[in-house]
Length: 143
Image 1 (tube, helix red, strand yellow):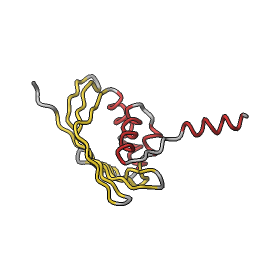
Image 2: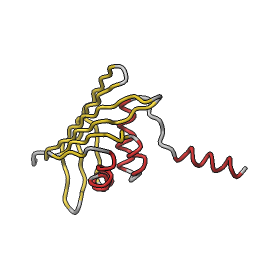
Image 3: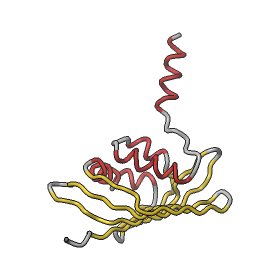
Image 4: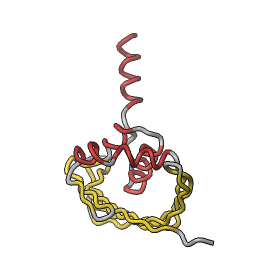
């Protein structure tokens, strides 16, 4: 009985397999926003390329060592909403493009930015892995 309980606990702790590229991106954002570092990393290819603000991270390990914790902190203290979403698929490759609006407070400063996200995903079995992310943002105009 104890081994069954351990097995069920282990299965419950695995990241849910996202059936679509959009669900994978939702799961990635949710993992970041709730501080689930391992769940976020599990959705990234080991060779992911992340472009942000003119910088590049060349792997999942590099992202984990540099910007992941800052991204988690930012998304935990702000609220984002998707303004526009588009998904394109070609076989085992997909592109997800989103426009977002993020508000809140980060490091004692008010935040109101509009963001652009482009993600390239590859299908692996029943799930998808993120192989490329490109993020950019701009401050909202003052009212």
